[in-house]
Image 1 (cartoon, rainbow, N blue to C red):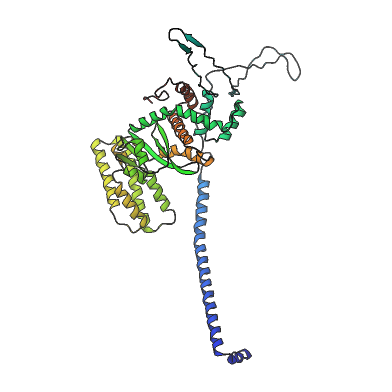
Image 2 (cartoon, rainbow, N blue to C red; image 1 turned 90 degrees about the vertical axis):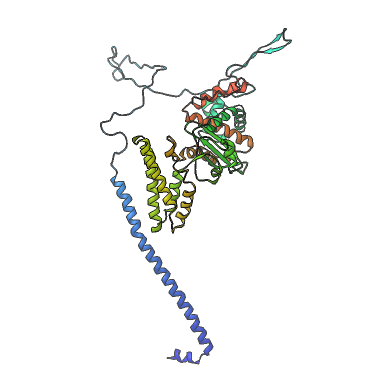
Length: 463
């Protein structure tokens, strides 16, 4: 009561201000309570889904058979093949028993064990001497020719240089690692800075081999193309890769525009160009096949966060359409020519109907425009047998460069970038053709360095 009468004695203006302040505090408290309630409801609604997903994963793990790896029961085992030759034979014999020292007679049986090992490498130093003669007829000095494996003016032999190329462009090792391996395993002493210098000289003489690779790819029935970021002394460039099932070419350029693939492959190009949906390839004239894996990847990324119903229905329809097209390509030989063409026409009609339909979801509005724009470039693999529907070959050829990019500063000079392009093209091509990289480069380099190989000798047209 005293508090009541005390309030009556207060000024009216002060009481109104106090009431307004209390109203604001009350409104803020109510809002905070509502937000907490919503948060609790959201967490409680998510917990069952998490538990269900954990239970599903645990049930999947439990459902796996205990011994699902390896060959099926009853199938012959697979062990390391026996070597086709024996370099040396070590025989262990006894003259007396090691326990009681009683003399032993002739052996009654033997136990054989075959072991393969690596002979420790060593540096082989060769002195090349070329005699010089005076020709009284020509009135000049004549010098004997270079030896077969001689690298003129080079202090490192072809095997050492080819090994560096293998470490750098296949194993993706930096220069300091290559230096340590050569020193510890072979005893070859070389500075870290001498490695890129030697590889640049090597690439300048093997450049015609890379030019030959590009010429073959230009006339190939189909080729994949892709690009990734690259740095030259900290300045952004782009690494382009052109590849098919037997040839690979790498080019580093400051541009990511269409002028680069036009210059590499020609405009218009021959054959079929397989690529993703990057705009630089849209300006090239010729037959194309767009990568269906990239299209599926975009759909999968867009559907990651609990998509609405207007997203799921078109997704199901398009995924089924792409699967039917690839299934039709696999069953090409089971249909007559007319029957296959009829089914291919149905696939294309379904694509056109899907692209011209109306959608409320923004993703499908964008994808429908892309499909309508590239409708003649999505099913080229159905029109021409042997054409893959994806750009996986180019993605795989880019991967070694991405690994090397993450382990180094890429290139410091344009000469280093040119060396990387040439040597990577040669190494990847040799790997695609299932040839020994080190031996092939070691045999090809001396003739090029000596100037007795004016054309490509590393690759022939029958590969």
